[in-house]
Length: 432
Image (tube, rainbow, N blue to C red; front, top):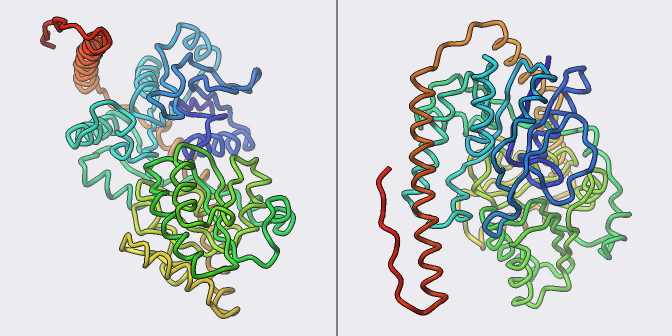
């Protein structure tokens, strides 16, 4: 079948959504399906890509590493006509998510949406962040779900959350699969040698985009507390982002900088080596919908210490394949790390084996089977008419655009007044 993936983030951007789309796209193509990815431009975008349509975008929106797509040109319609799509799969409710909705309606195609992100955890990237804004983005995402024909939830806990919020569209749990064959093998000692980490050091590892919503300052505090009690231990961080400065600051304050290593962003093969160099995996984010890096770490046989949160709870089973902590406490987290350090060999082997079994449950082959089965079901049924819902959605978008313009104009006027130091008259506020 011909599948259109529409997303606000894709390679070379580093993050869970981009990796998810890349993984599913590769697996679908391996099975003989065609996939067209519609995504924004990012710095470092390859000059030639297979079936990828790039949309011009504003880079590094509000200090983040995200791109904001600009209006889509008519060239996309030409590309879609040539591609002859059968399924439209949206990966965001905003920006290009609106384009996905319009494409599905124009071509009379089923629209699938994966609710990858707890959007309320990301409003700090937007001016005028507030509890009201968090409520607003939850409501907007819920309404978008109900305009779709099928919703994919990356975990059972997120599926339940969507239904609690009022999603009436069918929800199916389809996690992003892990490439078990890739992450089950790695060069432990070669990676340690390259990073200057002793062969016998107890290595706590973490892999993630380094950003405030990932709660990495807390993680740094907890790992630092553990390291102070374990002279042979080190901390390895794989990834990049603004929170690297927070982690460095914590370790510098505790005089532990020499025991902290940053590996940056790694290719898949080197990432597998990094996982195998670790002795356990530490994770403290509460903003996940799945936590793909956890299943990757488990494919490498790593026990995981993590905070209990949606998505994470579906993978980490307390005292079976790791330790799941309900309390966000530096002391509790450090003690859990110490419990893994102090396990008898047979107890450690039990956690490692359970971790590998868990990874097998989340294999890419299994999750792709589930997604493709949903696509097939959608193609076999008659789509409902959604004229009234679509009209209501367009009215909501019109109000949002109007309010955004008002806010932007007021902010620019205030900026001019502050820069000049002279009184200025703000533009009159207009109604919607």
